[in-house]
Length: 371
Figure 1 (cartoon, rainbow, N blue to C red):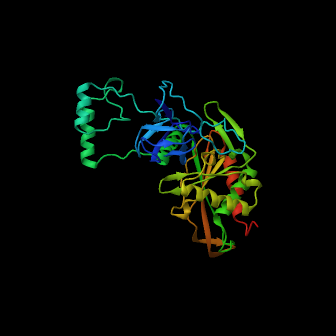
Figure 2: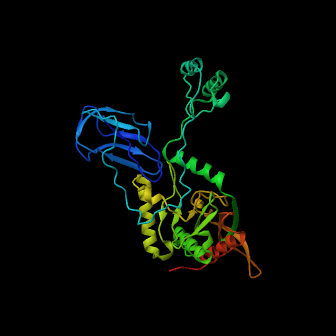
Figure 3: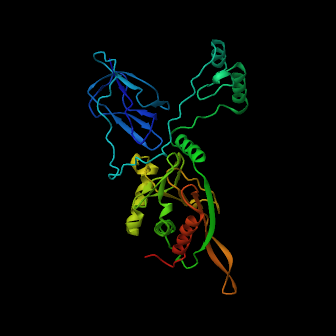
């Protein structure tokens, strides 16, 4: 027998969730025939067969998580104890950029090595208590009878917990990483946009303003390595744009926004959003952001404390645009105002640098037009 293991999916992705098997045990498959679709924290990926052969066993069912290097299926044939993967997945080009400076790719979170006595294990099975990822209260994390009974009572009272999967699991890891590594400070301000046309493309205006801010204060367009206490200033502005979906938060990256025409940026943004919704976006398109934009104001909220995910050092949030009473030339008038919230990593940027960035953003947004 010969095992075909889950290939390296790239982008530091240690695991995937089985979505759907496209074949069954006993099937004769051909090279490059799609065997299974899996969901990672980045996208849904089709995995092709590395060879011709008869499938004698499938490892795992839909909804189950499998880690890189673990068997996916078994081919009939001569015994092969090595389980070597034949072939590898083809990956989309990343425009030639190698992000070796990344410290922000979330590390693999492994389950605790479960230690428990046979009696405790038997009790967990009888009470139908899931012990994966649970750190016991006993010595060296050993699970005890009290731990099992407590978990069983919680399940009975509140129902069983639903493990995070796919995008939401990765989002939780990234947020924990940011909380542990970043020293965040948030600046808030309002910008008067009364001169805008009613048909103004708000997102494009925000993207243009971020580019203006980065050009005025390049410090916020950088990567910071907290372990090495090193900062890499970036020439190209690669903007991560937060996209909310039912599956969780995606942040596709618009490349080189400082040197692209507005129409090209809009087309690129539309394509990225469509790929996100359809879950066809290549993992490379979700990597390499040098600064991030969150336009949460399309839903609700005035100000926020957006989360900076390392290695980037800044994220700009835009709240709900509203009419507001403001004094202008000794008169009280009603103007449309856009609230802004800028969070930056104070290890990598000073308050003055962040304020200069925000000032440039405000000045650009205050213009009547940018065409």
